[in-house]
Image (cartoon, rainbow, N blue to C red; front, side, top):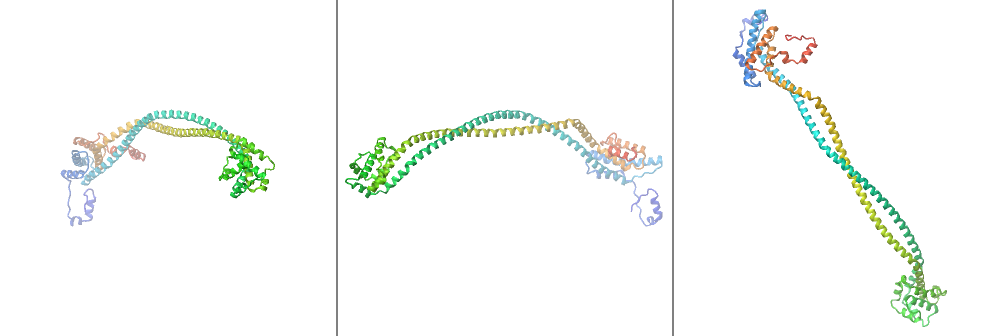
Length: 487
């Protein structure tokens, strides 16, 4: 059980409880010697960074000096004002613990404030670097933009010229296509006319060829067996001899009939090259009204097929005389059409090449225009960012100077925190019931002692200036608290 002998409380308890005196052993503790005080302060300050070991030792010694100076001032306070003020080892421990706590808090506070300003200065420096970079970027973009604009303008002119050329080629090709189409229609008319004429002769020719295929060896033998053939059989064989280029008599006829390839020669007869003389001779027989296939069939069935063949050759030759010029005209027209188609294909290929070149140029132009737009957008963004950054750096230029000065001031105040906070903690721990005059004397003596001991301390150090901010003092005043230093 620990009690303080200060005041009437201890005396009153001893009267009320005599056993405290009779049944207890009382240990009376006197003031700690200076060596003990110094040892305690050194132990508590051992793990704290105060700048150097010399300053740390000076602060430990100053703790003892403050404690003893307060004891001396307490005696003078009682002698002059008859008022008691007691100091105990607890006050000494409060001084040290409070100093360590306040020093840590103020260092953190100053460090946050200084870092905030330094971060602001760093941001300003980065912004200035960004401004320089954006200026350099704009300067480098300008020649590229000019080159892109010039190239795009040239490409646009080239595309317009090639487009015009392609349109002209397209018109030419369209005109030639129309001419070729008209030529095709004309050729088709000629071809259809020739085909119609040929179709007149083809039924008789096909019928005659079918009749020839129906003949056999016995039929040929039957014709050869006539010693004196019937008149119409005679006429038929004479017509056959005329077509084959032989004399139109029965001996020549039998000679022709004796040819083993007689039927094959009739089937493969060159009907397209019958001479006019042969056709004229043949016409005498064809124009004879009695020379018909029906009439010949009454005298010889085999001779009927040969009669049909001669009449078919006559019809074919007559038609071929009409169709021949048409065929020549058709051939020439087809040759002209082929040449026109060839030229048209060349023009179409040229048109395709021009259109492909124009399409490639358009793609190239679109790419160049997009690149130019991207560069313009990039330059625009850079200009806007540069303008905003210039406004910011211009507006904060003076602030940057102030921030730098404030950061340096905070750093200087941080170096002085060792002594300023120490004196603030001493004021809190020992001011107590001292009046203003005594407090000023104490603080003046402490400041002088700190200066002599080499402890960093401000020349105008005060409790309010060290531990309170102007904003807090203003709030106290708003709430009606006294504004003097003593209160």
